[in-house]
Image 1 (tube, rainbow, N blue to C red):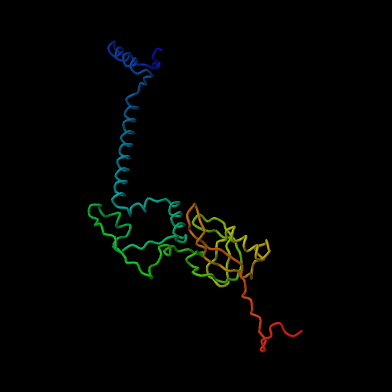
Image 2 (spheres, rainbow, N blue to C red):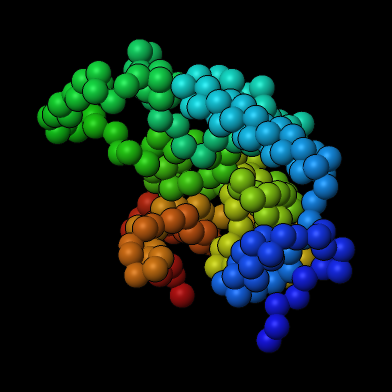
Length: 248
């Protein structure tokens, strides 16, 4: 295939023509002839692009060294997303020493950080389980230490969790927190009341207890379960004369 050249080709000397033919054989394609003005404009554009890249690289390096400057480069959309995230109820709290905040850790060189030996705690009856750190606005097994007799106040649909998933929750007259209703507990309440409409469950007394045998993904995790309230049966009174069967 013969190399192509643009029609507007300036007059070339035999040596220049020979060099151009050799170039086109090595690199097939179209040779674009530029005027001196166009070449100068392209050079200026390349220079401006190089200056912009250098300034951008310097800004990124500055933000790496001074993390607080990152806040000034956030868009309004990003600020709204951060504000929305901070308004959500925290699912887990971690307490850090006052001299080791996350920002300070990010600014300290790795070589100057002192490695602290983990503290060893002696076991005692008063030790708290790590799961109590979790702060939930709904009832969990950490809130129910023994079976409790509760009265259903209402069942409503709410946005639950950080994903704001719509779920049904049941409120009790005796508790400030509500219980996220799963199918197993809902089916139990249906069997107790005989009512399919959840609005008709108000006033029903149930027993809420912690069931440690509940498993999830093959692991025993425990959870809250509901059962029917069985009032204690009154003992039959025995006559003073001891005649239980009475006289015929």
